[in-house]
Length: 185
Ligand code: 5GP
Image (cartoon, rainbow, N blue to C red; front, side, top):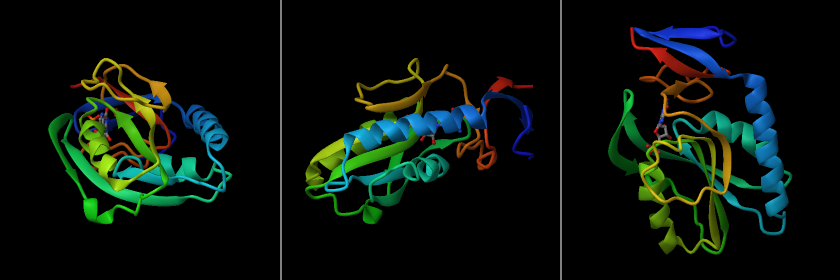
């Protein structure tokens, strides 16, 4: 894969560039500025990025912050192929101590919302002062839960996307842009 291609084919699936690397970088800067505005160095948030998909977004986002933060990568999984399984696995052992801390959950994409709907309620017992969500992408037509999403990069149509951390069966994560599926054959 060449990371600057306008279209990509994985198996029989054709994907076309939807959000360029430049457009993504601009949005990450806007989100970072908003977050900088909302937190201070005296009381910085713990940032929990949900793996695997959010690793690239989290890496770019946290380097916008003008406060010192703790970044924790947390494995959650719900997808196989192109459909959400509805079952969410969370590696609670890897969670940092959130007692009396502000927390930001970083997601690559909110699709059905199953992941956050399963994960966010578990944070109530951890003593966090506040919990906010920052997601790069949101599919408003797909969401099945009433979720409060403080920071949203792009609202996108209900189509499968890859790139910038997002995969198709493990492939395509290293694409610099985000690509949307255009055909199944
Ligand atoms: P949700 O639980 O909101 O349905 O989905 C959350 C996770 O599913 C995301 O973090 C992401 O890993 C995966 N996902 C949802 N939609 C897409 C998509 O269009 N493309 C890819 N590659 N993954 C997706």
